[in-house]
Image 1 (cartoon, rainbow, N blue to C red):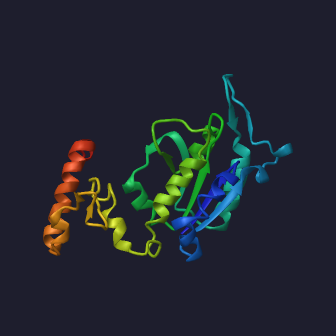
Image 2: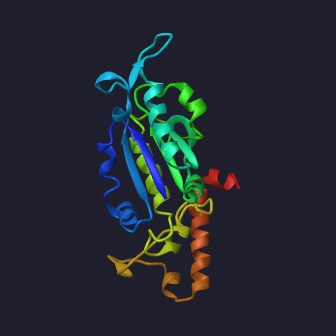
Image 3: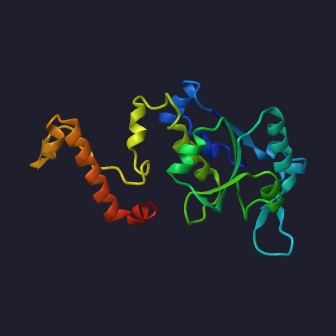
Length: 226
């Protein structure tokens, strides 16, 4: 999978993709992440990529031409399944979206800044708009990192145990059950006996019930959506 990220601050994204599972995915040739500094592709002097908005108002807007120049260049090199714009008014990112994107081959992610990007880019280039929550960040880089991490870990071969992702929270519209490890008795706090019984069927039933109860308590909205 290849993900091209357009940003004015590529240094913000260097660390998140050079550690842990994202580094493993890249080292194994499963994920190719390319960072593109938008300022390197603007026809304007001194790397200008933003300007005042028409009609007045506070805040600058990312100009259409630098984005169009870079997008045209990338799209001429290969076909892209999605051109994603990270924006607070996009569709809320969830596990289903991550699952769907993990099946794609080539993706572009545009990181907005200032008051956003010229809407003509959204109309003519962007195919998907994503938000990671109902709040505003100073730029789209952190949101892009979240999306890439959530998608990248689902690629076959990234996780040492690929079945692990199947039991993540939200994969089946429920939260994950509680988990325990050694020692079985820590300060008098004991692991539930069922997890020590060695009966896979009983353990699966217990985990399902725990997931159901935890979801009812903490995120009943997930059950209402089913």
